[in-house]
Amino acid sequence: MMLATGNRHKVEEIRSILGEGYRVWSMRDVLNPPRLVEPAATFAGNATAKATQLARHLAGAPESFPAGQRSSGVWVMADDSGLEVDVIGGAPGVHSARFANLEGGGDGNASDAENNAKLLRLLAGVPEESRTARFRCVLALLSLGWDSAGPVARPGEVVVFEGVCEGRIGLEPAGVGGFGYDPLFHPVGERRSFAELGEEIKNGLSHRYRALAQMRDWLGLRSGSGIA
Image 1 (cartoon, one colour):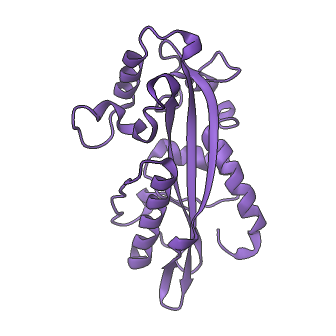
Image 2: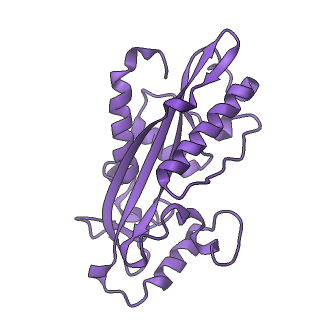
Image 3: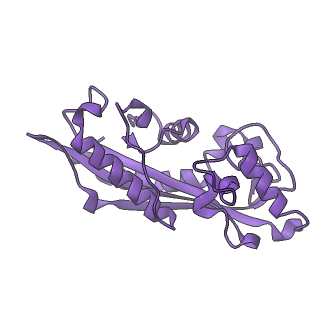
């Protein structure tokens, strides 16, 4: 499976959740990887766009694909995910990674610390019971097959999976694990943040786990397809 991301944290988390039965590459394994554009206002739209862009790039430049997997099929998967906080209208949403840069006209993602600091500023004075939020993850999956001429993308056959984890935003960062907004997010039923729970517990209840579990079940029904 080829992931349409170079984010080490996401790649490691996805590998851990999927387990040893899947061979997983990221864009760090692609020669001259494309710059993926997120043009949509929804997670599903952005995930679909990224998966399609990467599949088309690999189909047009087969030499960029990791050696050893060029003679068979592979799934291309893109993840678009983020945090939705109710009291601020569902923000940061699809802008989660670049939240702190929005007003300043900055191009690209902000640091985790900057994004967390901005969110806490916006929630200053908001009581705990009103700090409800959720992490949402949408995965877009499509197949990249091979014929006699090389790889062939099938962008019209995108399958989408979605996972949600409800919770609340803490009053201050807690914990040193995870990434992104993990130090601020407390899932329902937990006093600890994602950053405090540890990888094993987080990966068993997170939004990404729930979307990947759906995808894994769907792939299990297609296990005879010959695509890994």
